[in-house]
Length: 108
Image (cartoon, rainbow, N blue to C red; front, side, top):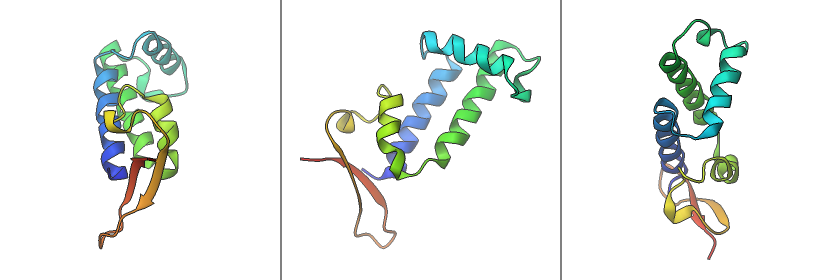
């Protein structure tokens, strides 16, 4: 699977779950840390606005990650990682397409 596809699938799930406050107990502490931090966009906002600001920031950060972070991405967000890549040793390679895409697969 292309790295950008893997990353986008995780980003979509992380964004959705932050907005819906479905990440579990960690959400409360994340939002509290965010509200009390130097993240100026969160000051004076309602909880839903804080979640939106945090979700936007999470997307911004994750979009900057490159293929070297694939293992960390799976470790942090196992529930968002594509099921076909959720177990086993990940391997990364560049495909033969003209665009030379980074791809991720399970080592067999």
